[in-house]
Image 1: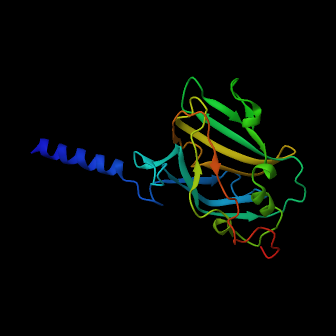
Image 2 (image 1 turned 90 degrees about the horizontal axis):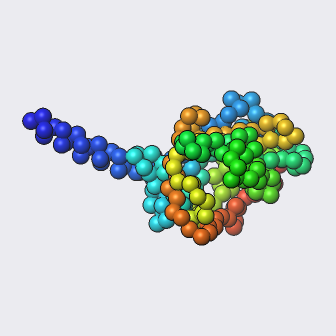
Image 3 (image 1 turned 30 degrees about the vertical axis):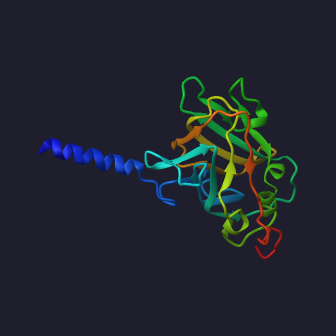
Length: 224
């Protein structure tokens, strides 16, 4: 009888681990790192992950980011407490760490901690990288803005990337900074959450992304 129950428990465990319901199990959740005190606040941001066939992507019942694969914004809100008036030196600074004693921290506050990774991969000019987001930050909001109407509806296609050691578990976060001041910040989970990335080696990669779908509103409306 004991053996029978052990076999049943094993099957249940396997079935649970294999479960990957779209919008439930394949969700990467982001949290605000300014604790609600930022000039810009990101709340309830969730990204869903998919494989190369646009099927929900999970590993052990949790979201897995796959390369090649797809992802899309599941939901998310932005509150602009104080609008940006000057785009100069508006940057996205990354915090990136791999769960590996050989690699460990790769980016800290936008600066590389790895001799094989240049600073240019840890810090980006925000308005060049994401002009739509930059436009949003120029308008003060009376409350949280639902950003899902402004982004691509279909999953964004991202190819395999020629970056060694990309596969594994990662902690990822980012800050919007200007002249050394943090305006906004987000991270995956609670800061202790590891995201599993599956990466196939390839000679190159690309991202097929339409930042503002045709016929959709833009961020230039003062009524926001």
